[in-house]
Length: 109
Image (cartoon, rainbow, N blue to C red; front, side, top):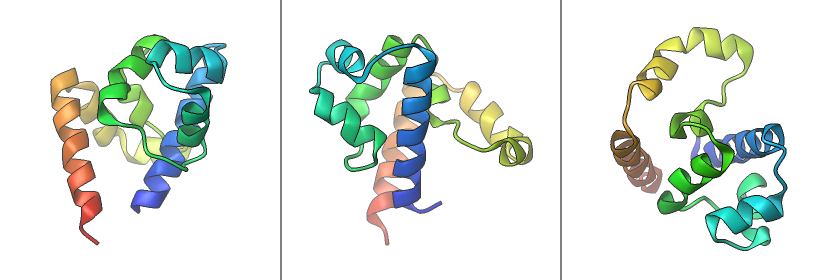
């Protein structure tokens, strides 16, 4: 998956989870401590979310962190169960490390 695609998928997933939680962009922004415009940028893949905001977003949406990163369609989801199980088995700290690795890989083009 290309970095640009990752941001698009993350934004789509964030919006989906926010709407499931019946939360507005304004409410999420207030909880996370950012401007409403920032949430819109995340959801529309204009700006990447910063690492320190991931746990706050998950808290606001009342979900485990890994669910922010499960954005496979149904067919892909069944084909990628190992990835999902791996993410589910990780602690918040381990997911932070994984996210840092992904960010470093993004720099390599």
